[in-house]
Structures are given as C-alpha cells and as structure tokens.
Length: 300
View (spheres, rainbow, N blue to C red):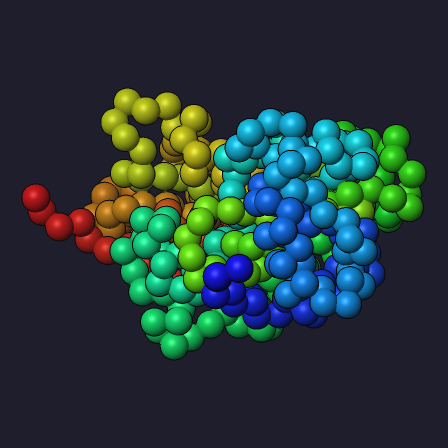
C-alpha cells in the first residue's frame, strides 16, 4: 500500500483510555485490506478492536455509513467522525470532529488555501488537541449515562439497552490519522455506551448561561432561526435572540462597526467573530472570546 500516514497526537492514550469504557470497532468506507492496514497502525497487538472492523463490503448503502450493520440499537450508539454527510440518518448520534490536516495534500484535497501542520513544522497538542478534547466528552457522556442521579434530567433517555453493552463510533483515518494521499476515504470506530439524549445534554453545557445576538452574519431576508450558526449555538445551550437587552452576553458579528457591535463594546459585553461558535462546537467547550476578535469591515 503506497501511502504516507501520520498518527494524530494522543491517539495511543486515547485508544487506551477509551477502551476502558467502550467496546471499539473500526467502521470504514474503504476496502477491507486498506482497513486492516490502518488497524495495524492503530492497534498492532489487536488489543483494542479484536478484529472488529466494518468495511465497504459490509455497508448496505453506497457512500453512506449506517448503524444497521452495527451490533446495538441506534438509541445507544455514538458516532465520532469528521464527515457529517456520510451519516445522513444518524446525525443525532454524531460527535463531529475537526479534520486532521497534517499533510499539504489533505489541505489541497479539501479546498483549504492554507499551510498544513507539516508545512508549519507544527502539530496538535497532546494535552488539549482534538483527541484529548473528545476523550473528555466521551468520559462525560459515559458518566452521565450510568449515573442514576442524572436520570430525571434526561427525559429522552432510552434505557432499553443493558448497562453493559452499547456502541460508540469515532473516525480514524481523517479523525485520528493524517493521510499523505487524498483518496477521500474515512473511517470510524465504534464503542459501547451512550444515547443521543445524553450527548445532547453534554452539548448543551458548552454555552450554558449565554445569550447570543447576531449582527451582520446572516444574508438579508434569511430566517435567522434557520441559519446553521443559530442552530449550532442553541444546540450548545445558548439562548439566541434578535433583539438587544441587558441579559445578552455575546454579540456575534462580522463587522465591529455595526450598531449592535458598538453596543456590545459600550456595554462591556463579549463581541466575537462567528468562528467562536464553530470552534467551541469542535472543541466541545466554550473557547476564549479574546481569541476571536471582530474587525471593522472594509469599505467596498
């Protein structure tokens, strides 16, 4: 197999810690020989996956990953992947990860006009990078799922699954690995424990207590409530509003010169770029507002 592969930082610790909580699978739309080679890199001793691999030939729908080939009910499955589109029927179960663009070919393939980590002679952090962050999410979900004290707060929790065996899946090739070739293949891992109701609860903790107003972010005449950033903020627990009032905590804007942006500065509220919402969504925790400043829009 002619491919250069880079393991994502923290991957070995991630797999070791996750295996204490979950029964893990690899789920890939690649062919089985390819999946086996990747599994050897991740788990040379076959300790974590124990040959549990779902490959292209096992899929029942082309270009889509489905839980119909996974042992375990949908209500008790989590998915960790960097590609939302392949999970069309199971987005509520998905933890979307940021892609790992270590090689320049990866950036080019996905249309990013930026330098890759290898070109920058840098890499993700072992302590607070993508895998370290998502491990905390999995641990939090696991804890909530099995904590009787939280049962009453999870109205939609599905308890039909026995407490000893459910599944969670997460992406391997782009999520845990960086590719030297841009072949567009994605993998996922699957492990036990969790329902999407618990996942929603954890997600809502991210922006708990935040009230957000948007300024010059949505296209003219576009229904604000239908915009993906509005929905994303609400999914993370924020209250979104069209109007300013003293309870507003954040103004999200593309232009520091708008009336709402100036109000935020005057009232000592947070003024942040829309990337603040996206970064918080990927990292599963509210990101420092100072890292997402808003500039004055240039006159056309």
